[in-house]
Image (cartoon, rainbow, N blue to C red; front, side):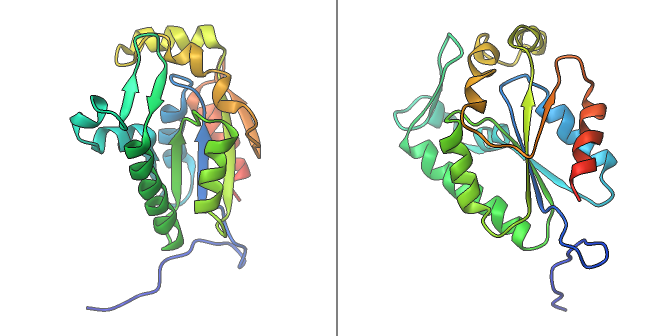
Length: 191
């Protein structure tokens, strides 16, 4: 078996963006943008979202203390067991990027700036593009109902809260913009 160094995509020796972090509330359009980014960016990018993490957890994590709870009003409460698994997941994504994979992260910073800080620490030394994905609460709420797979109220409760204290390289608004239009704007900044 041959060992090869990880592939690093760059033009003219410049270090390229290695990770794109999309942060926005539920139903703001992050997942659609992430899929469009995979279509418009010239190299292969992996997409991982917080929903990937939640879906990978045992069902018991949704019903026990320390896991994750989706309250009837849309509030999301996370406990220590969830945080421990989330930390490992974040470190794993950072390790993939350090190994040469380019990664789009579809995230919901429930803790605003504190959530971003956890990611910043894990992604230290990597070239990261921080993107705020905004959507008017009423529009996101309409999408939430149409999707049918979300607790009603999440979109409204998260629309502004996930952005508190977060610093971005780029902010986009999906209220009236299509996913592909947003993806092209992001791709233009992902050097």
